[in-house]
Amino acid sequence: MNDRRWVSRLLLVWIAIFNLAFGSGSAPASTSPDSNPPPGPDRFSIIAVEYQSYEWELLKWEDRTSVCKIVVDHDGMPLPDEVYRDCGTIIYRKWMAQPMCNLNNVKKCEGYYALLIDSTPMEKEIAMQLPAASAWLSLEDCEPVHSTGTNICESKPTLVITGQEPLPNESINRIEGTYNGQSFFCEDSGECKFQVPETDDEGAELTFWAYSTYGDSSLVYEAQVRVKQVDEGDPDQLYWYVDVLSSQWQGEVSATCSETWGIFPPVGGAPDWLSTPTESEDLSSDIPYTYLAANLILQGAVDASSCPDGGLAPGNVVNQCGLEKSRDAVREWQNQFDDLILSTAMETSVPAFLLKNLFARESQFWPGIFQGANDIGLGQLTENGADTALFWNTSFFNQFCPLVMDAETCGLGYANMDEEIQSELRRALVGSVNTECEDCPLGLDLSQADFSIDVFAHTLIANCDQAGQVLYNYTLTKPESAASYEDMWKFTLVNYNAGGGCLAEALGGGFAASGLPLTWETVSPHLVGVCSSAVDYVNDISGQPGE
View 1 (cartoon, rainbow, N blue to C red):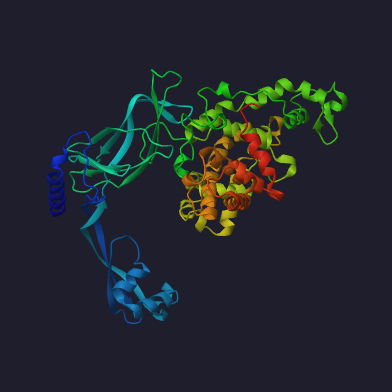
View 2 (view 1 turned 90 degrees about the vertical axis):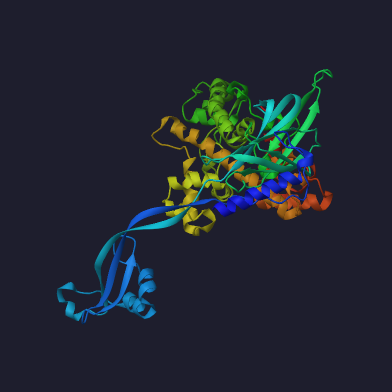
């Protein structure tokens, strides 16, 4: 331990001397681009643990002679691998193959038996991994724009890298990194600040890490930083919009899927349909949904008895009179989920308007089973959709699986489960968004609908990941180099509605015809045949909220 720390400190001294001409302190200084890479986390502690050692003897049944001794550190009989370890292959094989012994007549028993002969308190040393140092990103004197996920600064933005050392009596003593290809360091400090200049739309690459007095460093972290200057109509008042994509970002949560794709939203924030308001009232809508009106009439929530045919035409399609009678109930119903949609959007960063528009398109906010099909809930989840959610959204799988299965089964991960177990888990997920309930008012359990909003948000996040992978598979180009933030969301909706096969076919056709970048206008014409309905689906959801 001491040797390693001494060598690391000597290395840091050498680096400091080498860079003396460039300065040091809390402000970053330039260094040689060929500086030594950080060692990374390398810390553990040797601790003494008390335990009980048990000595067993293996004896023959026929004459009670000892054949070997076995030492274990647990209660109970020696395990097979311990017999193999201490007694050898031949005895192990006989031990595993011998028949059960009738203890009432041991003279006829074959093989061996184990006898506990001693128990002794012992102590052993084990290596324990210690928590590693880390480094985090933030902005100084900038305000987050909550509805867009971006940040606005009234002066040139200052990026702050803060080292964190979890071990007592140790501290961060240096921060290093590169910004847009230029090296920097901050010596004798756990914090590094520097102003970031304006960038192009793709932003600048940042790598950074922190050294500890322990003698090691944090991991090397990456970030993409975009800075755009705007005058907001007043040339005397300049503003800077700043967006940061990084796992170490401590500011406002990035727009959903930005980090997954490595794509910034438009400068100043995403378009309305991909935004989240600050108040649920801003999600309010007043659209005369016909499918919703028909269900409210069928379930007795609306009295349309004075209308011709009770307000419903053949096939349970609402007529104009029924639609007028149900107008107030339809308006109230479609807005009853707004608070939950907003809170889910805040927790998951899935845009609130996107969620509401998707529910409007899929179910018109009637969270039942659509016309006896396999599409269920507010967002009409199917088993294929459940498969996408569980496979592509690992964090959601880790949350949901323990609600259905034991820890050992969930520990396998969805991809490693047997098909039968996967199918059981998919059915459970689809069932979790099914609100139909014979004994409930209107035949629906609305508390189940509330729970399902979170499920659909996480399902959309899974489709983000899959859409990005499909794009890469068919263009061999990462999303950040192939499409815009808004277009990637439209591709994600294709994936959600029509599946990865339709998206792959459309992306492949668009890429072959137009190359890069891929846009909705170049890709959508290649959604043909059974995939063609996805065009109207995407155009409907991506329209202005409330239209």
